[in-house]
Image (cartoon, rainbow, N blue to C red; front, side, top):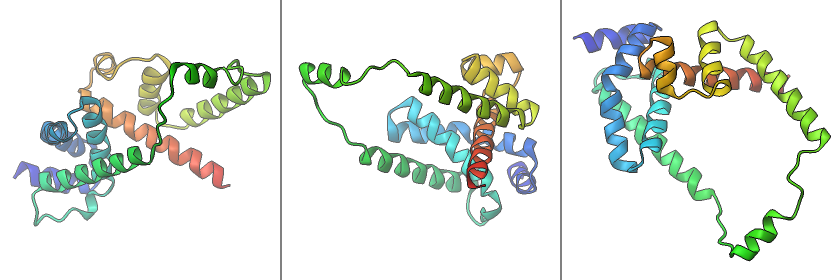
Length: 185
């Protein structure tokens, strides 16, 4: 009964209900993906993306089916997308001599122009970050500028680890949308 109530509340945009559902189903989805991928990092990334997609599309959830079944179906699709992306990558085996020649084709030192472009891009990114809500700014700052782990951020903010992961995911998604919208103008 509590699950159905939280699903209904999440469909109305209740963040606490989202957090409850994430905490309640995280281990089940993560365990399922860990068995499929046999890779903790991939399983975690897939779970994060799964919950983000589920929460974005929660209005489309059909209560005739179990919520965990719906989440697992999303996770399977995210996993398939990941495998497709990896399949399109091309790898070439090079001998040690060929590798040396490949890496020494160009000077790896950034030019003055490269540094200016990097500084401009960083300035634009910081501008977008400042437009986020303070709690999203904080997790971005802690993760990418102070380089804290998810667990360190959770300890610092006194929030559950899964909340930190979702908050960071949402912040990155909002940033991507802001950057994308700016490029269209």
